[in-house]
Amino acid sequence: MLFEITTLEKMISDAHSLTIVLILDFLYNSVNLKKIMRQGWIDKLSIMRPESVADHTFSMAVIGMVLSDLEGYDTEKILKMIILHDLAESIIGDITPEQKERTEKLNLENNTMLRILSLLPENIKNQYETIWTEFQNHESQESKFVHEIDKLEMALQAKIYSKEIDPSEKIIPFVNYAKEGIKDPNILKLFNQIYSK
Image (cartoon, rainbow, N blue to C red; front, side, top):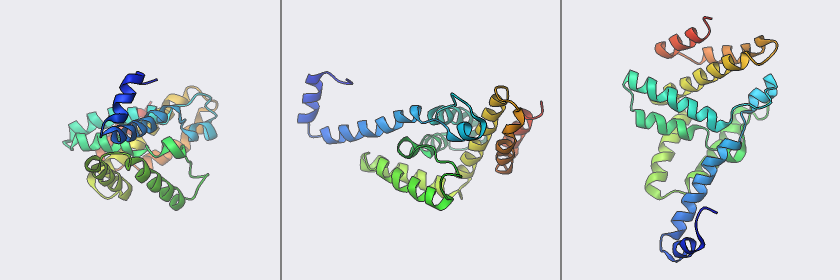
């Protein structure tokens, strides 16, 4: 139990108790990402214990923090975008392109994300919805940057998994998909360094 019963009783009697309960629901969804496995690694590489979506998000956050600072982006915004980018998967799971058509998947993610964000106080909800929409639209410099970090993280993880699978060439579709999506010269340099060995 997160709270002692007396603390819970006090919270329920408090005028802000509903907000607190809703925020806890939001946090529960976030923590649930630790249980959602990255489905592509299971389906295509037969990895028995793949990274979770939370693992992927954490790795992206570290990459995003460093590269954003190096390139002079708004790192706080980049990190928020990274943390939000797969949050809908806490409810719908990690859906691969083979499981749902792209438009259907985007609609499901958007509807789920709006439901998750509706648990937050209005000012935060609006800010996060704006960041989420910007990421989904894939038009701003920051959203393009985050999409490319997503590809770089996948390429790095594929390199790690290549040592665990036989034949290691099974990672090639992941590598090619990542490389096609990377345009930023600094991210591309890192990608090329990963696969130069």
